[in-house]
Image 1 (tube, helix red, strand yellow):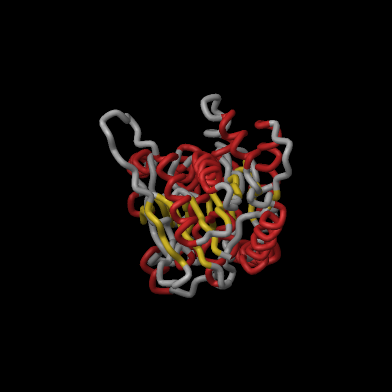
Image 2: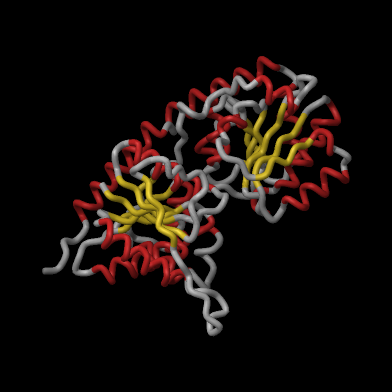
Length: 379
């Protein structure tokens, strides 16, 4: 198939999932065309089946904000015509599903079905805002297919938007061949020269991720035992996290690595992963850590309970409860056998339900289903 994929190219779950999906589909023989204003993070253009089409937005004094939605719709139509796309797959409803709807209308009577994948804040935060709710609902209902990354998000969408159409749940996934326990002893020795346990966090450092709670949890662990904290990613709350590290005089024990590629090489060195978010519709970073045999402490919210089994492959806490998180962290880190056992169980669970080799065929089947059911073009 020839598939157009649109996502936000920034550091975040929806962009990562969309990019990884495109690369996995390309590896299975499909031609993938990314359509966005910048190359998506983690995109590998080395493959002859992966292409990038940049959306150019014209600045004009009349516009306070460039009309990206319109420029994106135009580019979608252009790529459809030039590359004979079979369908569009847009990730994150706002504004991508609106642009796809416009592109489909402009393409008529030629057939250009589009699928919308809902990722989380496009439903729970942005889309539910009264300024966007009607158009978000309309674009979802007008999509030829709709998927959600968790049962939680599916139910939330049906409730918040009063959606009557079916929504297919296809979970996030991880390449289980790439994500595994790391054997890079040199890098581990660089981070923890005295053999200290390593705690890790990966996110876009937005307020919903509660990065300051990560530092607070680590500080409580550090009071009881030597340890190191590795923070991967960047975003608006990085400054606050850095300030808190200095305030607690933890500079020698905390590493800010910023945005990185080849995350799997770093995650596999951790002894514990922290994700104390206010809300997660799935928790992709937690799944990636679990595939690397790393137990996870995360908030008992959203789709995280679908990924983590409390007390088995990690622990679930109430958002903001740093005391409980620190207690569980010390339980894991103070007994090496406990951490290794939970980590191995985490990988078993990740492989059982979320390996790319099992999830990607579900997308392929759904594409075929949508193509078979989409209305035929008018003569």
